[in-house]
Image 1 (spheres, rainbow, N blue to C red):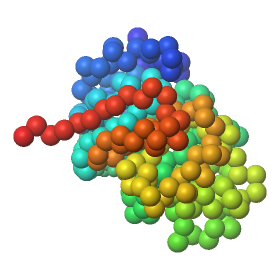
Image 2: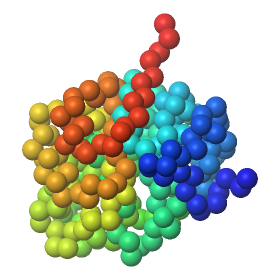
Image 3: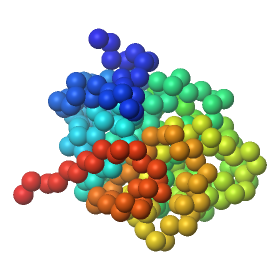
Image 4: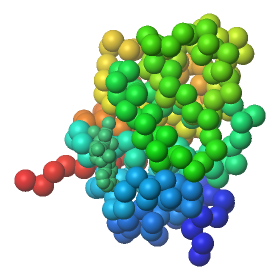
Length: 237
Ligand code: ADP
Ligand code: MG
């Protein structure tokens, strides 16, 4: 069957058909759009890393994910691809507003993952913005933030927009990502994260990725995770 059809391959609660793709080892074997495949190919990504192979069949079905794999294992693509695919399948457009929020603990990491998003999402028409504070003038950002489809941000700057930007609207949010989740869930970000999550719709896909598995039931509850898929990849030694 054509793999780049716009229909979703599965939905949360319907079981999905992830098992069909569980054995895939290359990106071109996944049920993803031609646009994403071309973005991956253009960047030289052909074979999936272990965390990508283990998580993508689930995340592409809309499941919540708790993914753990060491630094350098390729976690970024494990969430960038499902973000692009979800919005593509929903035919997300400029007028639909914020469809996905990707939270990173530091400006530097946000910056890096924004580059990956731009490279792999090159053939899509989504608008994406990097909201990390410091460098950019927040007032200019405020005028544009409502036109963005994908936000890559640090907790502090995102919360600043939620508090100060007129008409800032996340009510249609489809996918929430916490990169380096263990650091974001740490005490230092606790208040900011609670304030952010309280303003997000509960019906959404949520994915947490970090080097260590997040086990705190309380953390998972406050993020409203629904029957998450726990995926841990450990190096054989
Ligand atoms: P992590 O977030 O787990 O620390 P990254 O997503 O930053 O890892 O990826 C680490 C490095 O591996 C990056 O240079 C990235 O370009 C590369 N990489 C990721 N996935 C693949 C892949 N499927 N094939 C080849 N290189 C990859
Ligand atoms: Mg990373």
